[in-house]
Length: 443
Image (cartoon, rainbow, N blue to C red; front, side, top):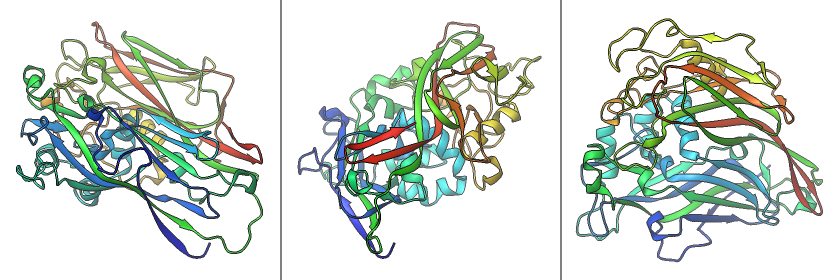
């Protein structure tokens, strides 16, 4: 590749006023990177704009209103879909995007990242009070300015396609390209982004609060090929697939038919289902299982299966809590999650031997009650509770789950009626096959 050019794409389905919000009833944002004889540098893609929070139509947010300091701007993207602009074939779709980022972001970035450049670009922060004051309370908007200001942001869009090293061909399908890209962002509900720090007892005070985006655009780099290029027949890329279920017993058994032939790893996180879309709770926090009375439900045993057989670990992970009880959300017997669960989880998100920066520590992998007035007043960037396992960190070819079920068995102390929402993300390798009739995705 020789020279590079910068592109700035505005939303194709919104008016020129530049004001976009979930509350307005049009939460879908579309960007078209048109078909052209160029290659898209996926790692250069950035979502750019301004972010403001309002308590109601005429009032700027108050000090009682909060959002996830761990995710910042990533909390507003409910799903990310990338399609061929020519054929509308879905190339990659990540549902529950904030839940994916609540695993990916703290595992792959350090506390210094969160306090430094990511606080500038993604509006995150390791300290909830600082993030609330500088982002949610929005000091860049004067009370008399009538929503003319906002905090500027510039975030990348982590996904398999854009995170790859190889540039993405934007040429026509018959010329070995994807025929341009259609990037769709579904905004998250206000009720799952903004919440009252006082809890459910004061949530009615912020029931009409909403966030608003302005001056939104997608920026990226495209490169010019050096001379004519022969049409490609295939293009390999990594992909993230998302799944959701609930469990509500001491023996949580989760099974999915993934339908994927080259699975590299799986990881997931949990939250009490009653905290989702709840103005009195942080619906984007991670926590290990919790009982209805907010006593912790420690994991006692964990193993993963492929077609009913233990795989890739041929043994049960018996945790340090197996023969003890975690009594409280502070000092107790073995209050920290078993180190093997944490290590396997990290290895599933990114290869453990190559992990150079992370926010994971014994301070944020503790068993807690899940109460955001306690657990979210935290250190080291927030709770990073999760489970997972890697299948292939050597060859990069993955393991075949196309005709066998993936499974997880988890024994925990969940003894009361309190459903736990479980979000699973599968990292796999896909192949795009090009032809004159369009493209097909081989999973």
